[in-house]
Image (cartoon, rainbow, N blue to C red):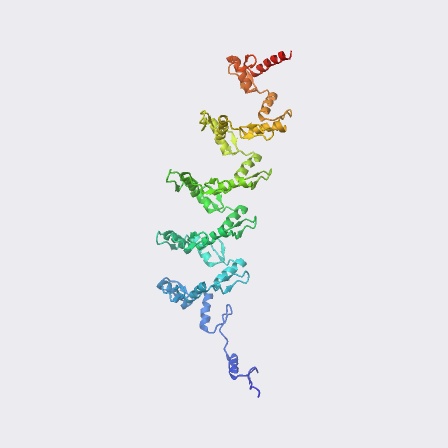
Length: 538
């Protein structure tokens, strides 16, 4: 027997069951659902439509009698009232945490279950909350729908805009109950509270270091993993933190957003500006308890303290030499590796330190930025100026403990000490001759190579030594710089003047080893020696 069919008298559609026909008939008799004339959304009842219209009109008919906040729906007002009463009716069965809203409890439960139901269709990232997914999507689209009406800055999140607005208003709504300090962000207050409690709840499983913030722990872990997720698109440099990359990018863009209101100097980092301001205020907040010395920067203070403690925290793994600063150790390591990362674009010379390259560049530019206020002489290095100043002051701070001789430079004292010790550390690989100074070895090597690097511009005669060229040039110029104090006679060379002085003193210093005759000059002795040679040949 065939199943009885139940046809619809209005549209002719048939159903096997009468209940389905009755349900279908209501689609013909149902009234048209109320809809919004602005956005065309439909609602089951007129009351829901009225609530929806408040989104367009901005009307908030439900007000809080305690703080005056207004809401579009009564349920939102009831939830808000719990912030005043402290009521948290929804509790977590796993950890016992309490919440004001059921939706917040649902979100919290996902921290226990690990559930992340909201997935990004572009990068596979998942989130516990739909709002977090919406915010994440903007990292792909670049959308920044929230704009500041004062400066025009745009933001992806409204909360970020609200925080930004406080930079204009100066509002700091979050206060510390312990010391009264105020902060623009609640998160900053939470970080600050750790200073009072000393709590460091986030620990590194590798080395045991503890941190006040989870973000700081994550950054620390990259030291162990070597991960540097933030890379520069210009030069390829990688960084562990995003803010380090942003600071690095200013090297390429030349951006210096932090300006001094007093002198107009600009800096790429806010920290640099704060340090610079101390040059105007004279502030030196870091004081040494041992000797009372004060410093503008904490790093300089810590380096200074190592002078008292003798501590050298950074040892070289190759030779065992220790250093007070890590940067000094890195420079030292280049002696072992031979690395010279700083190259001159003009001549191609390479250097281990950037400062040495800058000094080298002055050879090409001719720049001598350090001038003597006494005589006007200029120097490429400040150290050379300080050494030069001793010629005016007569200061000789480096003394020989053997004979008491004093010297302006430590290097000159070191060379002098070799007269007492007999040390000759610089040896010739060709003939084995040894010398006290490296410059003397360089001059000696020209005997083997025949090199004459010092050429006369007037006659093209070349010399092995610069002093020989200087004496030769005097023959062209006729210059006689050395004069006798007794008779006023002039000489081109100092030794000729000294030999001449002996004619006034009658001092005989050059003796003949064959007959004992004495002479006032060496050249007179040489002429005399020829008489002995002639007698021997007769």
